[in-house]
Amino acid sequence: MAIFVFIVVFGLTLFLQRWLHQHIQGLTFAVTGDPGCAMRLLFILLLPGVILHEGSHWVVANLIGVRTGKVSFGVARARGKQFSLGSVTVERTDSLRESLIGLAPFVVGLGAILLIAGYGFDLWPDSGLSLNDMLQQVLSTATDPLTWLDLYLIFAVSTAMIPSESDREPWGGLLVICGAVAVVSILLGWTPRIPPDLITWARRGLDGLTFAFGVSVLVNGAVAVVIWIIEWTVSRVTGGASGISKFALHALRKRTNTATAPAPITRRAINL
Image 1 (cartoon, rainbow, N blue to C red):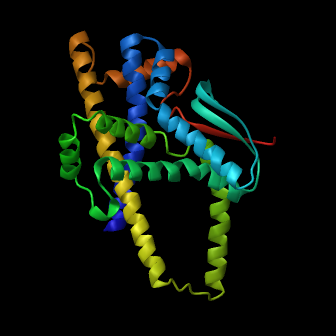
Image 2: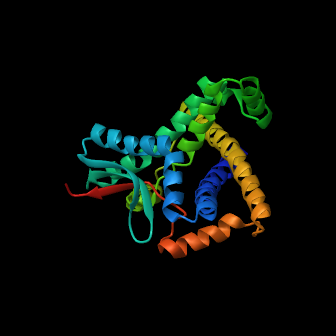
Image 3: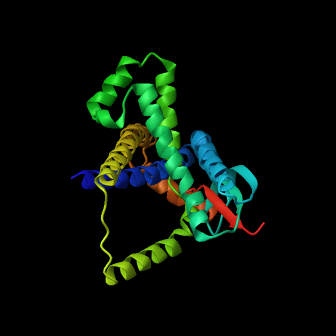
């Protein structure tokens, strides 16, 4: 059951990230008619998450002995028909270290969400999470500006922490190697014996991940509802279609000749 809940909240996290990216850009373009404005607004809204994402790449790369180059923030063309909100140049190295560098923003982002939820709303993984608990905490401190700052930071971090395509590049080879070693080991008769303590820690880790994704889903789900209401209101006022961001995004893609929806944060691995 715990694994099923984890899969559901993880899937919702991925869905909401993409949905928010698309609709923030689409709604902005529908209102302003300026594709550059749509991308810049997304960058501004996600800036804390972008900084944390690229900073995580840079810190982990230096910790494991991989040289780094230029760190940049801002809207720029990445690869093909995609745009980037930020990037850091790192030295080309082995698959293991590249995988660790690519995974860093995801791990750091989850840690940041746990800390914000814990210290900001007194919600921790061992206390469980429910929509009612979250709402009660927010409503009880609604007059405190830090409450809204905490919610904004959760939104910005969670929608920028998912590894981009360039972050995931080295994972394929590493997974193939690990899978091959596991298959050969089983064929040779090796039966793994997992210590009970390790199982306990794995369960706690899964609970922590589920909790962090759950907080992200609650916050981003609320933001998505607000954006949907704004879209509906704008469509009523202008007499347009209710799916205003969908059509606006299509026009934005044609106008800029780019698939702007993912707006990835990239990690460029090159030989320095």
